[in-house]
Length: 230
Image 1 (cartoon, helix red, strand yellow):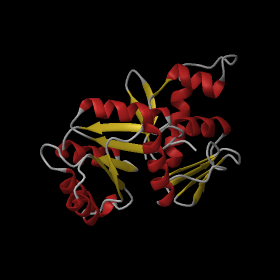
Image 2 (cartoon, rainbow, N blue to C red; image 1 turned 45 degrees about the vertical axis):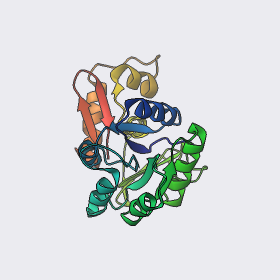
Image 3 (cartoon, rainbow, N blue to C red; image 1 turned 90 degrees about the vertical axis):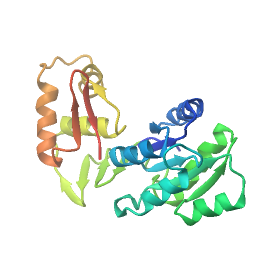
Image 4 (cartoon, rainbow, N blue to C red; image 1 turned 120 degrees about the vertical axis):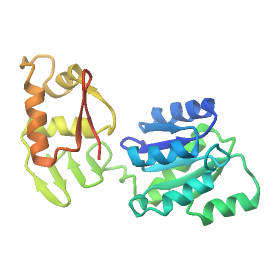
């Protein structure tokens, strides 16, 4: 079981901890953003819409408990999982963290493999990781269900008809939300090295997909490529 398609925000004012945790979670397939204080954390939650927030308690601007409370006060973040990752051992810190909407309280230091296991357990409990038989075949991303075996796309439970290459391109982008796929990588993975296509081929397919699923989900990153956000 991997963390592919899972978006995690790491909030800690120590950069080396951010980097260490990021490295180990990226190895598991997660898409990672970081924040160094409470104010930045709230901005990232709004922009990134993570599945899970790993939240330290002692930080500048707002502490972790305040950040948790602010997130929980906004209905649009009801599905965001919040796990505190902190060295604070006092009972009152744990009580405050959980009483204000935290879903778990994890003590530092923690071995990377144990942290990954705790995160996976949390995500399973909150139904954010599909069963292992689905991984790599069915993507469940917000409004979308994308079934690679059946070549079917659903948005808000309504089936969307895509041509074969449109589907393959959408599946590629959606397989790693937030990742920017360059044009060469898209050509290689969707059309293969043995097929010669024009420079506008990707652009035309992207336009057709946007017309069918909505304009806001596939972003153009100028000079780089495309990414899928949901």
